[in-house]
Image (cartoon, rainbow, N blue to C red; front, side, top):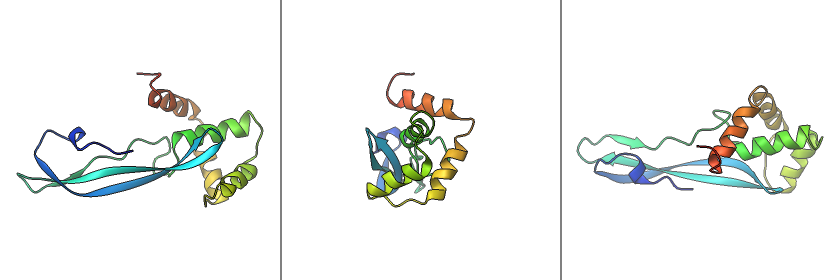
Length: 128
């Protein structure tokens, strides 16, 4: 996913670099790592450096995408799949993550599943 330079401002600027954010996501029974590339710009008139903000996340500061969190909650509470088995599935997919990280995600989602669902619907174009 690339963030367009034109989304930043209508000010003349030159791109001088990029910031990259990675997020672990879940797609139809598989796991993927999303790479989000954000341009770093230098405003021509003022030499000010700026970049696009990272996309919002349900759990600020985490590397988890909303799809991973939603899938993790569904697997745990609907399919009754404990976190240690979810960890084994992620590990089998070739992704290194600590078991404690999954536990922290589950703890962080306490009280905010509705936020997770709202962001998923918004991202999929089902909510304006």
